[in-house]
Length: 337
Figure 1 (cartoon, rainbow, N blue to C red):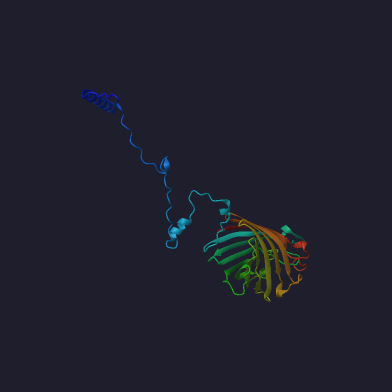
Figure 2: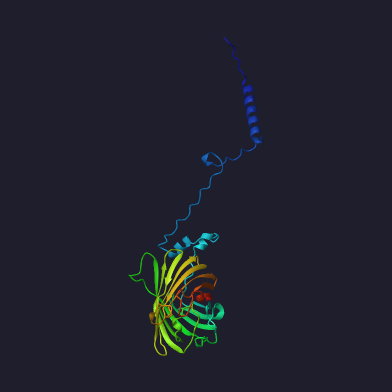
């Protein structure tokens, strides 16, 4: 049998008192426990910030200004070259006008009947006023600023050829107009008071202004057909009538142009004009002409410059003994607003 040792009660009490004192001293000297960190979701790291969702755009159909604000580009966005190139040229508006002059260097005879380019210098003063976007009034005053004093035929050329005013009105779309290409048709009516026979002259002819002033008019149409984004075709057939000292003068003029537009700055044109003499004669000996040439038009800001060259007649006889005698040059400068 083992022996059991019992501690006296006084000893047990002393031991308990000593242990309690030790725990109290440890509690007083130990630093305070740090506060518990907040709960961290997703297993650690800073709490993620949720993305801000964009506001739902307003219905454009309910507020037009909201649609405009939505479509407007940011103020700090830089426009690209493609955006700039896609801007269409400004259309003429009511109250706009063009004004300028065309200097023409046609081939014509001197006092001895010899044809040369600088024997004649013609200046056509031109102006255009837009009554509306599609209706204009065009004025023209042709001058022969350099000319022979007298021709071998006895004719006495004058400097002032007269003046004319043209009403050009765009017509609404007609059922007969082709739908394959964009087509514009203008009604063209001109009233003039000019030297006898001056209305039968074209812009490629030398300015032979003789005789007295006689009233006259032209009536016709101007047709423009857009064949493609680069190529346009234009023609302006007109009937010409002018009073005369003895008999009235009648003729037909059919100018045509094929125009290649390289943007809104540069245009290149090939021209072919058919002009009859008096009494609708197509014979060269009776004053008929077929003019052929080309031109370049350049627009820089409000200034539009035009240069052309060619022959005034492919038919010999009448005004021009040979085709070489009909070579012309013209220069045109206008202020466009």
